[in-house]
Image (cartoon, rainbow, N blue to C red; front, side, top):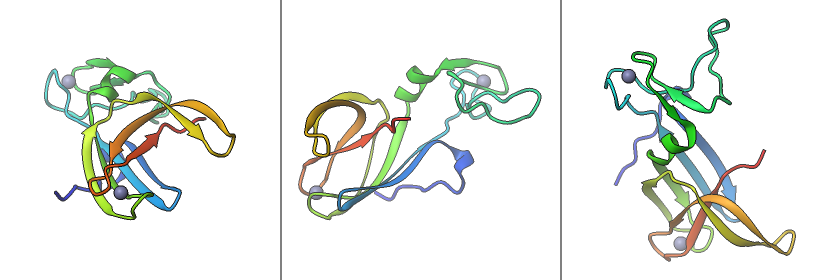
Length: 138
Ligand SMILES: [Zn+2]
Ligand SMILES: [Zn+2]
């Protein structure tokens, strides 16, 4: 499998490039064509006055037919592309899976406590251990 990388951030609704321990994760979600009219890419609405994308908007809209989808539900229906270097075995691989984030309980080594995080969990194709792509906390 050879994942297609985005040529620009405009093609994505999500993009991250981060290190986790000794590993690395680069992940992105492409914008997709409107499921209603099939003409334009869905995206966050733009501010009518400034023309800037409203990043914090709770919906995605189609600029053509104005179909709107609730943010969480819409993102859950998309596919995330992940290119990683495994923090457990250093294997470099690629995966594609649902962008639906799940609540995951894990042990935080920094605080010494259990915590619940929202993450896309995937398995290293070589060592089969879990790797979590956590949602960034603001
Ligand atoms: Zn549309
Ligand atoms: Zn591994």
